Length: 111
Image (cartoon, rainbow, N blue to C red):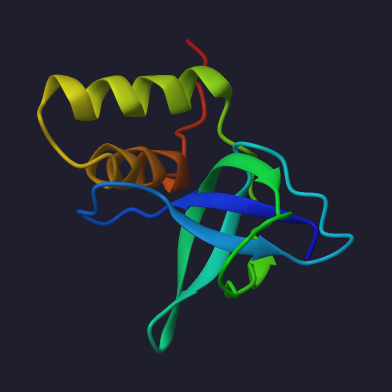
């Protein structure tokens, strides 16, 4: 693993969790990924990437990139702002964002 991915999970947690990026996965900030949390896989969003050099503990690897559009940088910034504004954990606004992104969009009606 060459990089560490900070992955924000849509749970009431105070910060992102660190996971190892498998070689050749090529993650980018905003990518939606599946990561292990206890005995299950959970969807999260990559919020930061850094070199893995100097790590002092083994990390669980990111399981897979989810086939969904990445969240734009402005959306990630808004999630952090919403968490600070509402004095909530950043996973709560992320959960609302992911639910809204998965909702089917109605097609425009012709008049």
